Amino acid sequence: PIFSKLSVKKANPVSGATVSVGQSIAYTIDYVNSGKVDATEVTVTDLVDKRLTELTLTSGTGTITGNSIVWSVGPVPAGGSGSVGFSAKVTAGKSSAAIINRATIASKENPKGTKTKPTRHKLSVPYTLNVKKIGKGSGVVTSSPAGIDCNTDCSESFEKGSTVTLTATPDSGSIFSKWSGGCSGKEVTTVIIKKSLTCVAVFKMEKIPPKETLPPPVETTAPCTTTISSDV
Image (cartoon, rainbow, N blue to C red; front, side, top):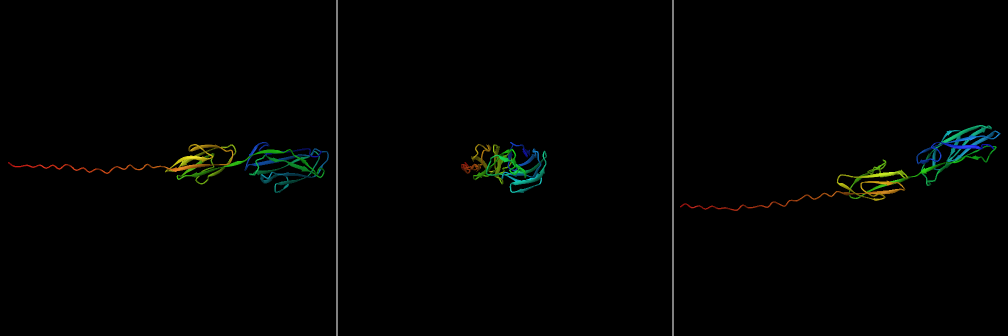
């Protein structure tokens, strides 16, 4: 058979690994003509998952059309081999299913082609943590890991399973009252990201006790003493 030995190997990361949005994957497609006759008009075709974008050829002469890549390999003699490759960036999509990639190599002698074994990558889908501040008081909410600094940035994406600590710091003249929504506890609270959620920080104005008012002083009148003397 022609091209019975065909494989896809990924340079980084390896098949079976978990990838995140924004991460790049590099694929290398190795082929071998294990037949006894030369193969002519050889092409390699890869229909790439739509969640992979910014496709870039890393080896071989090919054409990228949308999410399809076709390499024109040309003749491959019996026993001959070669490789082509490309890289792509993982983007967010509606599905969190594994990203599967496989290619097909065909020739004039084998027009139906031979498919590679698929590579699979688990996709880590980020969730959004939102912070909202309410109440008559004011303050700042920050996160660890960094990302939220809720004077200006009150929303951040975190991977599923991430542990995020939020710290509410009241401004001068204000006090932190409580958390509501997806958070609870005191000024420092910790959440484990399982889905997108909103945490609400409630700030109140600090109560200033009224100044003590002293009663007006009581005026006292000294008794009037009169001394009468007589000369005898």
